[in-house]
Length: 260
Picture 1 (tube, rainbow, N blue to C red):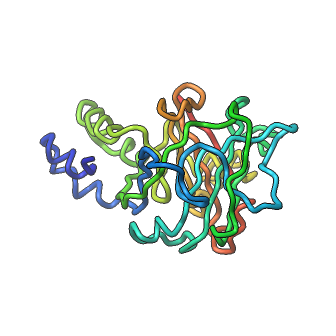
Picture 2 (picture 1 turned 180 degrees about the horizontal axis):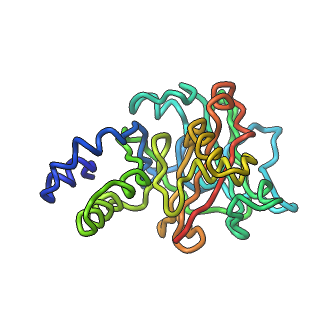
């Protein structure tokens, strides 16, 4: 897969590489791979049944298990590049109510997702959940990726044709599953929305300032292979404040969905 720099150069837009470079931030792209046999407990993957400690019940809402959408072994991220500020090891598991699909900003939405962190993958075992709450299982791999602030790109002073071409090139390579870096916003700036709707910062100008305190844990795109369509072909964004991440308080993770 070509990088955004390679795409611009290949399409005669190399003059814009330098100005866009100032908007770049390192992160990871998450790629799906066919699982070669049964994945080990704690392996990085999309979908399938969750891996949990023996004494823990799968997260649920109103008695129905939430769906495991992604499980990330952070040792894989560390091997793929600089995974800071994530922990160097452990497993992060992301669960979501794929039936009701809360968008994140309404009262009561918080029960519609959960993020769990397990320090030792050896403590985990595969758990049985109803087939109807499982997504198809794929192994997941990390690839270091330079991400761009798409909101800032969109606000730059391009002529309409150039701006549209650049944005179309950035959209190439979907689905855009991502860890760290800049979110690929479908609508408004993601971190600002999180600060406003989920973090309780009522004033939008103040929410824009508070947005600087957030980190992208996971961006999960709609994906036909996973039978996952969020709203109208949207994305899920799981975000956490820097202080909470440093203290591994993953129960304080926030989420918003955006769709076109």
